[in-house]
Length: 140
Image 1 (tube, rainbow, N blue to C red):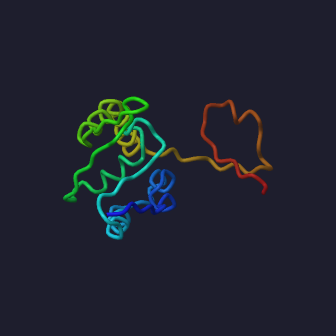
Image 2: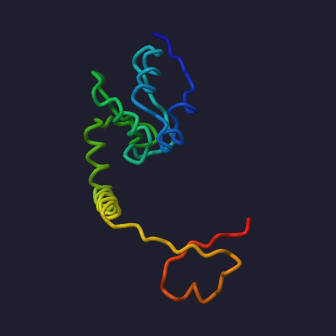
Image 3: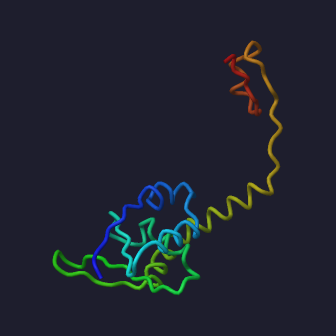
């Protein structure tokens, strides 16, 4: 085995992952073109804060073993199983995920207010303070 390097940040880097553009098919296609083992490099020291964790989650149904390698000291690395990293992530983000789900549920059941349309030529500053909802049509 030799060591090879393939840049794939444009396809599976932080920006595409956070933008929701990366699917399991994209990741599996990329891995199919590589010899094993595969190492995903990133800049985050703590794996539970890195987008690579989301990439691994996309491969949950695959037969691969996933291990996070992090620096323990300047000269020593340690291995952390992905399940342990996932547990840390869920512990740290569980509250926020629950709050987000509750907000989505609340938004889904709350009727959207019907906005009164006000043409710009009819705009009056008092409308900003009367407690009602408006849609102001700007002149451009």
